[in-house]
Amino acid sequence: MIVDSVVERFRHFGERPWTYDGRLGLGLIVASCLTTIVVAFLGPSTVTLNVGPANGSLLPPYFIPEDVGKRIGLPLSEWVVVPALWIGIALGAVGLIVAWRAIELGWRPPIHKLFYLGVGITAGTAMVPPLTSADVLMYAAYGRLQRQGFNPYEITPAEIFRQAYDPVLIWTERPWRDTPSVYGPIASASQWLANMLGGESMHDIVFWLQLLNTLPFLVICAVMIKLAHGNPAVQTRSVLFTILNPLLIWAVVAGAHNEALTLVFAVLSLFFVRRSALAAGVFIGLAGAVKVSLVFYGIALVWGYRHDWRKVLWLCIGAVIPIGVLYGLFAPQALFAASRNTGYISGGSWAPWFWQVLAWVVGDGIARQVTGLVGWLGMLVVGWMLSRVLPWAPAPGATVPAEADPLTIALRTAVILCTAWLVTSPYTLSWYDLIAWVPLALMVPNRLDWLMTLRGAALSVAYVTGRTVGFSDPMLFLGSTIVRDTLCTAVQWFVLVAIVHWFWTTARSWPTRAFMAGGLRALAGRR
Image: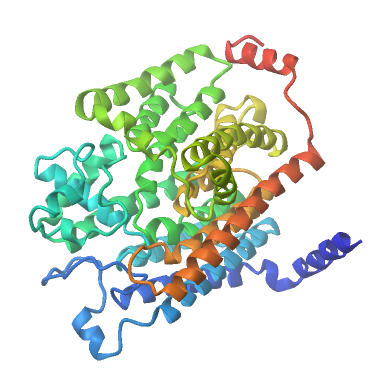
């Protein structure tokens, strides 16, 4: 009775007009992003990176210089900027929910205006210093090493700047100074290019890195709009889930992460699914040359073509070409670089509680190995569950039933695999979610919409205090121990439980021998 009462209260709450007012949703999204821009523009602080002096450069990022800031009372206290960002993220998450509910109920703003609004907000976010994560400083450092003739897969930034002063490497922050690069050859090339364009200035290098990561973000949205051509509802949803998604603007753009550079090639491969299997393969191979985690999209494409072995063959040929050239000739070490991340457990994921209890019994090393294994097994289980409950609906432009359309199959499979990996991985961060949000945009509304919003908002709030420098002990206790390690981890467990409940109450079934045999026959191209 108590549960029914709570559900009924939420149902009545959701019937209030403001909860599906598209204009209100957009207003909250804009307010969220403006909060981020203002906090960053105020200059270096506990949450805003110090990218070094501009030294007269006219390039972004733009911010109030430290000497000027001191005269007007900057930087603001951590007890001002951290709660401000928490509130901003929460407003953005609410705005996102309100806006996509409005789409379901018929709200159709002009697509071009919606897109240009997203472009403006994204550009504004990219023109101020990055926030909360110092990863972009490490990108700059790896590019600096390449420019100096060092191999970033073997040499760490700390090995260089501890021996002699370096105007770029000196601005890097803990904890990754002693970690070699884990990025693919295309990502490394972008880091080298930013250093060539930025010269000896970390400030200018950061700008070029932001530009190289923001432009792909815009391209991703444009391609998604094109894929949704002819369906205004899906086009609106595509804009809202990509370039106007406040959680992604915060995590990917404000954090200056290279996830968009990773994903843009995979999205282009989706664009060619119905046109050319070879072209789709080339682009998915290029995606894998940025980060190996895009293997999930490769599997999704294979599954989409599984009824036609010739297309599977052309897809594989296309993928092997860039992977073979870029990894084989230019950066063979990069192929195995990502394996260094194994054993990592991030705060705010589902894993810390499990690992800490297990470590108390069997020790840290074994506990990490078991936690990693549980994560992979969990991905298989959750992936199966999602495959049973995610709705089938043809992607825009389909001329055959959804179950036979390669693009629909690839999109749905990408959502299943990426979401299953994100929610079960012991090491997971909010900017990783881009790989699930994008294909989700072309699907019909479903429970993953609000589950991904909840997950992303929790992780975004948790990592406002993600930097390892500058915070006081009381703020670290609140931001790390309470918000990240307790509340955010609880949210991740809730998301897992919600997926299991979704499966258990709507489509509970388990893989049978006949099902597996049928899948193998389909993969072999036999009906």
